Image (cartoon, rainbow, N blue to C red; front, side):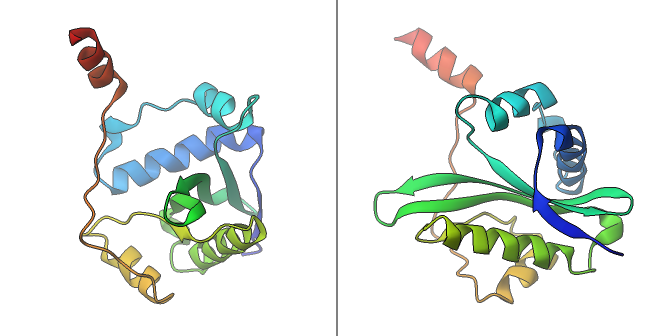
Length: 159
């Protein structure tokens, strides 16, 4: 299959959302996807874009995605956060994940980031094994924390 890796565009977003949902199904969490194409347009292509992405595009359309954003570490400085690499089930094992990952790594260097970080589910052995090929440091001591906006509103209303 002839596939190119290119910068994502606004008109790619409907397909990007489909890929996000495909990943959510794989991760057994489709019910947690509340993002919309409209929200992604505002967040990625508005006055102050907060994310960017690369797509893998083949003869049948977009079959892969790498979505990233910048974060700032008080210890390390500017970092690139890789939110997701997604390759359609049919195209897994063809090298597209590697191409997307390496394109994102090159972007990290081009943007003068001090490094790149991401998360992987502890049960996702194929992904863990993929990242280990790059001598990735996989940490176990940090715990993920989050508050959803509804929780925050409730907490702030209690004050």
